[in-house]
Amino acid sequence: MSSEAFPLGRAQTSHRVSVRAGLGRLGLRGAALIYLGGMILLPLSAVVSKGFAHGFAALRSAMAAPGAVSAIKLTIITALVAAVVNAFFGTLLSYILIRYRFVGRNVLSAVVDLPFAIPTLVTGVMLVALYGPASPIGGWLEAHGIHVVFAPLGVLLALLFITLPFVVRTVQPVLAELDIAQEEAAEVLGASRLRTFFQVVLPALRPAIAAGTLLSFARALGEFGSIVIISGNITNRTLTAPVFIFQLASQFRSDEAAAVSAVLFAMSFTLVLLTYRLAGNRGDRP
Amino acid sequence: MSARAEVVSQRDASVLVRGGLILLAVGYVAILVLAPLGGIVGATARAGWSNVTATLSLPDVRHAYWLTAVITVITVVSTTIFGVLTAWVLARHHFRGRGLLNALVDLPMAVSPVIVGLMCVLLFGRGGWFEAFFASRGIQVIFALPSMILVTIFICIPFVIREVLPVLHEIGVDEEEASKTLGASSLQTFVRVTLPSIRWGLLYGIALSTARALGEIGAVLIVSGSIQGRTETATLYILRAFEERQQPSAYLVALSLAAISIFLLVTIETLKKHKARRVSG
Image 1: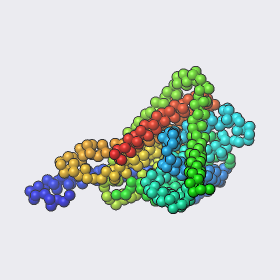
Image 2 (image 1 turned 90 degrees about the horizontal axis):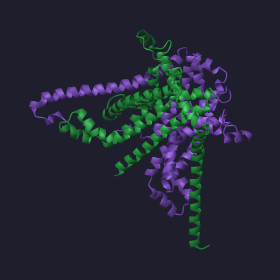
Image 3 (image 1 turned 180 degrees about the horizontal axis):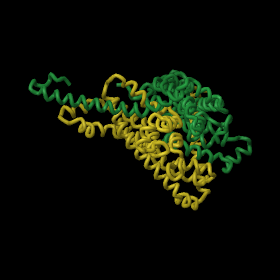
């Protein structure tokens, strides 16, 4: 709207209004800045400055603690395996939910979302209730030499549970937008279902699958609630990086905890940034 | 084989593939998600009704539920108000640093809850940047309610913003400008024009925030000190009951949290469908 549209006599009031509007706009902008800056940036800078106040000394001393290296290794490996499994089953699930009509499709869709709602600690408790030695299934598995509770397999199951929705929910909207005419054309031209999927559907989905996989990887790196119960936190065996940070913090070794935190955070934040690059549409485009 | 027979057998094969894929996906989800859910329901049922009455009459349990409710309500109200405000600024204002602000919104998704708790301790705990300020005014932050609310807000920041922002972009500014041209104030325009359009996205964001706030454990565990009957939330109670080998009580409280969450999820799904119908219709 341009001020030339107004007659000359009203110029003064419209000027006053625009000053007030300008102030209001600045006020809103300031509030948003303080909210995000104060709530997010400030605490993060505290972690980085505390962890690296004396260079890499704190990080080195934290990594020298027993079990530190194996905790970080276990976290990366289980998160990676969970991400790869998610890439496969997430794509499969979104394909089925979009392209097939069958009884119980809505129920399946709701169940896929369950992990978003169920508290992570409750996930851990549920897994112990099912696979713990006191339950019939857990007892049977233990008798056959398969250890879930207090074992790396339990950590992996917890991660798979909490990251189930990520790939499905990033791939689904892309697949829904995809024109089915291309697939039909491929099939009319004699391509098999499988070939159509790999040569027509998959290339279009690749960025979304990659984004969902990275996101679930990032989420799995930081997971705490479900793991703290199922893993038993055994040093050198089932201790993960977030639980290791928790142990350092509760021993009042906050410098070392901050150093390891900064490293873990840097890894997952890079992944999240990459994700949004890939996924593109996060509502941040004008 | 005649051409016709070939087509039929191809169709049979594709029906088989279809069935196989559906079976594989449903089986995976059933084993991964539904089986553990069945596990906890079974374990709680085996503990019997006496466990329910005994657990729910414990003062610690009642206090834990109350504390969780207080933290959740305060968190959801603040992230809703500031979330809508921030989404509005990100969608409607163009200024230097907007991109940075936008990237900040996603940060909490990348931070492990344990790190969130640690950050709060580094700011307000012993030797922290703001320790002296609050200590001299007699305000206890760490090992008390304020820090527990702060960390939960941090974790819930993205939900409302990420649900509302795309809707704000989608609806555009035409109606808002028309309303202002007709003489409505900014506030009137927001309440009468903008709010009704972002309603479903906002409710979805609020539901996600609520579910996350109810179940937060890692961050709260570090800042609260888990003082029994004082700073122990429902999730912290579950953790303690588990460590003290009171599994039946832990199962019951965990199941109740899961039930609330599932109720929320059903609400979310209904809202989503409502939203979808609005967009398409």
